[in-house]
Image (cartoon, rainbow, N blue to C red; front, side, top):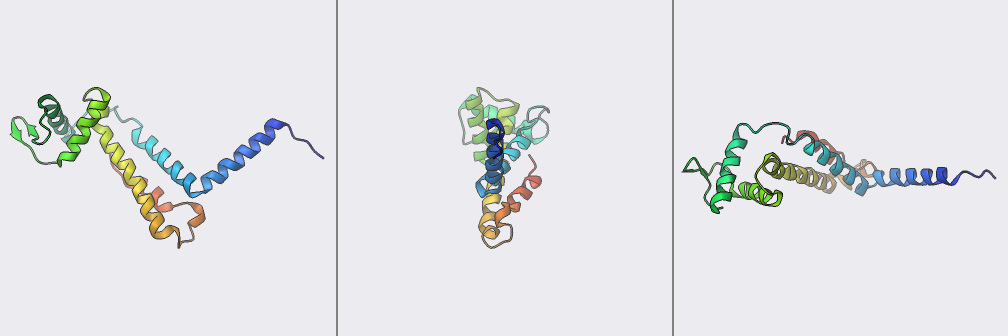
Length: 151
């Protein structure tokens, strides 16, 4: 009888359990959400604000300064180009992060993109998970959706 060292046996058991977990639906979802969170958050605050994001920052700043969260204004004029809940998410994030900055302005978009990946995974699982040949391979629909999100 060949006896292996304990650390080698533990490594084999851990490796097999990790592989088994990643092949499960829960493991595939965990991996998908982890990788998508990393890709969406990587380099989030490295670029300056430009274009429409500067307008959103000014409107959110005006809401924070005046306390009026139902009437967005830009340069003194009403500005209803974007739905109010999007401004509310920005101001809520600014409250949680201690002020309006690159991260607090962009984080709501990242969170909604991340939730979209999860939702597409769930829809794909609902539509093709049970009846397809991919049942044991996780859900390729959710994995493919990560490439279609633009933050």
